[in-house]
Image (cartoon, rainbow, N blue to C red):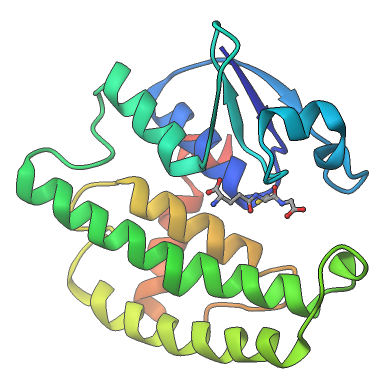
Length: 202
Ligand SMILES: N[C@@H](CCC(=O)N[C@@H](CS)C(=O)NCC(=O)O)C(=O)O
């Protein structure tokens, strides 16, 4: 197996943190997004959407989408469980992971893509949309801060894939200058704790 990745980009980073939490090591091939390595014919053959991460199986087939890749590794190595432990817990983790994708990572990514010079000439930028994403994520951070008042992790008392998604989203916020607001102490406490985990800091 081989992981086509750009280690600093948020979606591949989710997979790297997930694998580190599980103690799984796999071969990886770095794709230079800044140099448009994802637009090469070779890479498009692996993922026609031209995005990382992509997992190549030994039979030469490919799997894209960071959550799909993480789910595959959860199946082949269930410990520690990062997608929940029983029917109800798995559903709760699913809910939070989806929320973290759409309300945090997705909004921050939308702001980055539509407001940052890196994307000029790569996508059609709509600056107003970028600013709407910025305003939305600040609202969502206030909401999440309230949610985190009485629990350690995003989906409850155990570290899960939802923490990875939220962390990678908020970490990306550094680029379009989206920070956790000062009055969001619960969220900051969680962010600092996740950032100190060996899977993230190491
Ligand atoms: N939904 C996909 C999103 C993948 C994605 O957007 N990857 C970014 C890096 S974080 C990428 O490849 N961007 C290149 C581009 O859009 O040109 C996933 O979860 O894997």
